[in-house]
Length: 247
Ligand SMILES: O=C([O-])CC(=O)C(=O)O
Ligand SMILES: [Mg+2]
Image 1 (cartoon, rainbow, N blue to C red):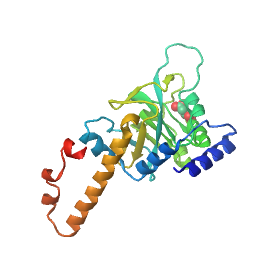
Image 2 (spheres, rainbow, N blue to C red):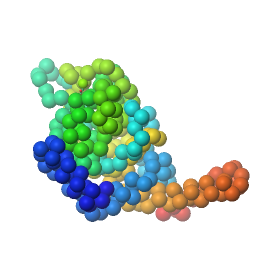
Image 3 (cartoon, rainbow, N blue to C red):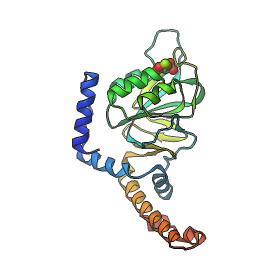
Image 4 (cartoon, protein in one colour):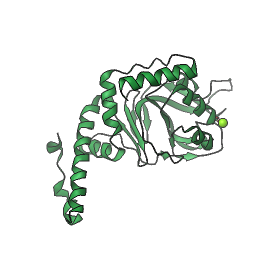
């Protein structure tokens, strides 16, 4: 997103939600966002692999046929079982209220499939805030409502069972674990038709630079196949650089 687009999106979110989203995108963040937006989760996963970094997940995918990739910075939510009988705020409600354009909510619920931790009302509120999507290490419900809003939802399953009375928000902007990967608020996320990849904020520049090289190499490989080179030759291990060469 360019600075101008970001300002426009923020202005739109302020109009519809009637509140200030308090999202401040620096020029550097915008430039990185634009570079990440033209990569996909596979190229980023390959770059993470090459650099020996974690961040690629498996088992989490779009829960309606989302076509546009979701790219943004993470806001973490740690979910867990409700321990007392007191009335509590609904899971993720405060995270929705505190997030905005360019951000993606990531909810860690230990991969649980027996209870939702996201639904249609939350998706409606998130849409009004201009939030880019939600990624859940667990399940959601009301998926038709999210789809009709065009609000991207990634997770492990869709179930009818409500979070209400079962799951609460234990923390926000804390380090969480998603499919075995440590994830912090401010990390980058790409969620697309291949799955979900996180890029640690501190490593983003070099991961993105390497992913860009990997995309160029894949273009050359595709060109070689089109030119009639045997795929066994084109895809031979010897054609892939070691970590040292990749740096
Ligand atoms: O209770 C839940 O699991 C969430 C829900 O239905 C909603 O946000 O509409
Ligand atoms: Mg609902």
